[in-house]
Image: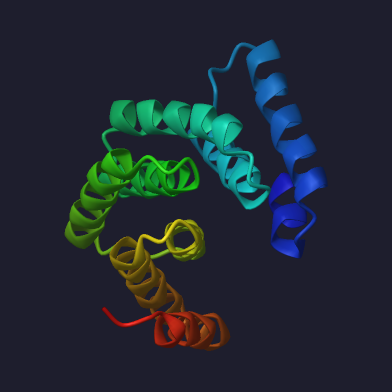
Length: 167
């Protein structure tokens, strides 16, 4: 249910159902699920709850490393980069963004969530006056939106890129 609510834009209900799914999994003896942790973190990022998002994204990163799935690891690094941008941790942003790009180039993985993470990172970098980082994050988001075939979102990112001041 969390995913349905998140896709509809009802982030409060999405957060509630992702938390419920994680708690149910723990109660029945399952460890935290990588996907639920990741989706909850994105939902929290969308609400500018960066500290909370960071905790769940760190959990997703840990699980992705254990899973030995490079695409999930790239996804988790992209999420960590978005958290870092929201918290204005530019050293963390640079490290996680570079890791995400490297892993995702290796796997050719594309995903709506990757596009949104790039967009979120770009928005926060831009708001903090980090134009170069914002441009890199927006370019990443644009590539992902194009790859998943979302022309409307790609156009919106192209407009953000065009509106950025030139150095």
